[in-house]
Amino acid sequence: MRMDKSEHPDDETSVDVLFRNGNLTVFGIVLAFSLGFLNTWTNNPNDWQVTDLPTLALIAGGIVFPASALWRLLQRDSLKASVFASGNRRFAIGLALTSIGMMLAICVDIGHMLL
Image 1 (cartoon, rainbow, N blue to C red):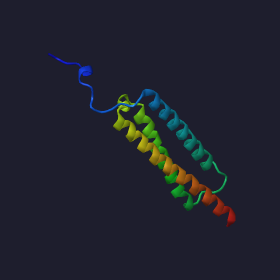
Image 2: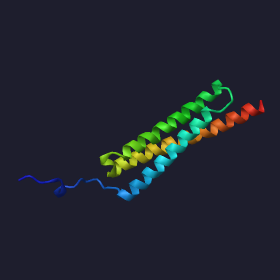
Image 3: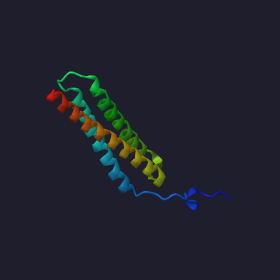
Image 4: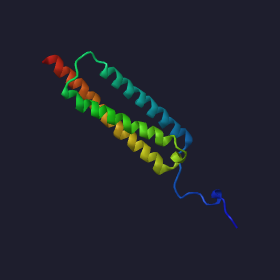
């Protein structure tokens, strides 16, 4: 006799759909903000310098992580607690990298103004 999946649920706990949807919204908004900041910053009328490369690397890397987190939470298995937690970790890493990159961009711009 064959048993269907409902008779043997996964041992892993699930995340509520509404909770996941809230995270998707936040991830999308922060990702859009990060892309907007990068667009504005790269169109800055100041000349590019070598000191801008670490900032660019941090912001670009910081965009990759939330984008992958957003993609991960859009997958079918994203209601599993471990998958959801993995997406949240990716988002947190990306948020930290982007924040550090933005602060570095501000510091570099202030340094250029003072020199």
